[in-house]
Length: 412
Image: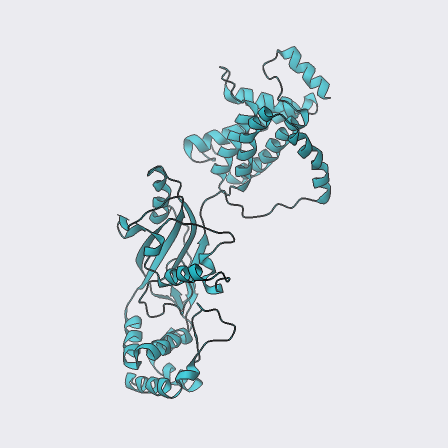
């Protein structure tokens, strides 16, 4: 069948069934795309076109995501464009889309912690700009809508809103030509060896000012002007910052009840004691949230240093002091000290590897072992903080060995 036949059918459709083929569902949100109805007779005419029939069942590549395609997506875009710009323009646009061997996609990072007032190309094809200057009609429509309404945004734009209010002051974006345009079957995507440049830029912006850039949201979609814009999916992600809370740790009612005395004891501590516990508590909190082992090892190491060394500038090796004090504080009996000292020594070793090598496995430990040890380390750190709260004071670490032995004996 010729393209002229398809064009004739499209003109007939939009002339005789304009109100039928495009409708807005009663429950649809104001920002949702209109629903396009494809009559069965028109679908059959379209599928007689080899170029359209061939795409049935293909996967559509948007770089950061892959979506099912199918003729219905293409025909919905075709009919919508015909209704707005005429059948001739719509047919020409559809075949241009089919003939071009790439998809133009835009990737956007919304940044908190930094504010800019103009658009700057900070690397080849990557721009730093005000949020309002991002060339995305989806984002502009959303920003206009939320400025005028307080209703919940539409599901299709949920990627632009988080569970709490965000206030990005800048954005990074890039428009890429993604190839191949289609996949016949789902590809095997290799793991990325490096951080994508746009994310690397977001990280290094910290030394500009300095500032505290945080990617609060990111999304990728077809660039404006693309034939299927609005008719295929997009991808979105939460911010990449590691210390966000991604899961809730369950505690039982009994655990809470048993912890109430610790809370009360903490509230009764002197201001000086609470100040000394502030860093260990904060860094333990951060360490619990981290998903990356190196970040967890660093923050856990800081928490333990602050708790067990606390301004002690003695000449003895840090690891020696830290493991000895950790063992002394937590051992219920003398036979447990050696094992505890080994654990604290290993935790500080992980902290050192993360700080100096950027890799907790730099000396041969498996990531599985490190992960298990760090999880146990979180519990050890929490137990040490709790012990000091229950004591109401920090141990006098620098007392003589006989005095330390008496402390250990008194604990038993």
